[in-house]
Length: 412
Ligand SMILES: [Zn+2]
Ligand SMILES: [Zn+2]
Image (cartoon, rainbow, N blue to C red; front, side, top):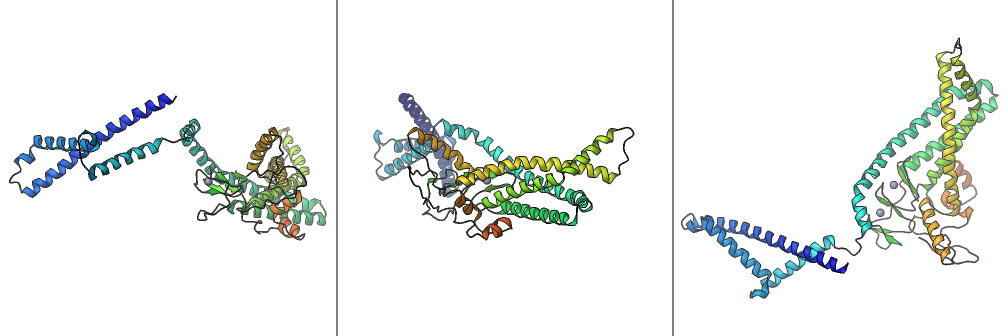
């Protein structure tokens, strides 16, 4: 292996020498031509018969090239003194530059594969970024369609069927959920998740980001779609077209929670209407078909769309919300879940127990994420729209934890 590496290096050095000699010759020829033309101009055309002939130019170029070669090889009798030292320095410097371009002790097959797949990563990242815009439009469109159907068909039916106090309850509950969903979605999509400052040098960093070339504070990870480091990164959400990090984690979770509750509410409220509409649609195929008006057939189809959509979203988003609730209870982000799982396995093999340094107890973890400091905050900051900032700056983290026993291991 070593012999082949040495042979390759020698071969590359030889190629480099040949390329340099060729370049030098070309440079010399150019210099000759320039000098010659300047001499001709100074001579005013009088004694230029020799200088203007192509043979003279060629011979002069050869002489300059030979002199250059002697400069590069002083051991062959050249005593250039200061000039030769400079040329040697230049020569060594150019060789070093060339080698630094491709020679790297960290260069391995993974790096080469990364380089080879870089265009594919680029395409995927850019497509995801654009899909994010489409997904955001889809969320807005579907939510608006559900709200319009509820206003047009569900609420009038509730008003005509149920007593007034039930109608008022539906009105209040539905609008509270709608306000919470819209507020948290807007804030989650538009709030920056937080990035490590580039101008600060003395950061409590655990590593250096290879892409941003900046220190990474604890819990910070690089998002390849946003192409930036994100503080306490959870994941990149295409439905928000934004990263979920330190400053918008609460908005993201609240949006998931209230959207799930809203979907469950719509699904339960429109269940009777859905069964009625389903029966009516089945009767369309009877002979003779029942005489429904255009408004009635539109109402049937809209309610079926509403129920199917809200039920499916309630199940899918409910699962996601539950998963994030478990993560918050454990004091982990989605990224840390993978890291901590690996670390637990690794330490278990060594007979040690892994402890998450960011786990401060279930209730404290929830307080930290939701920004709850007093009892009244559960009402004002969780059940009502609030744009308060989370505790901490996302750079400095509190590692202090009360552990009665066991090893304490930090994983950052
Ligand atoms: Zn980065
Ligand atoms: Zn991102």
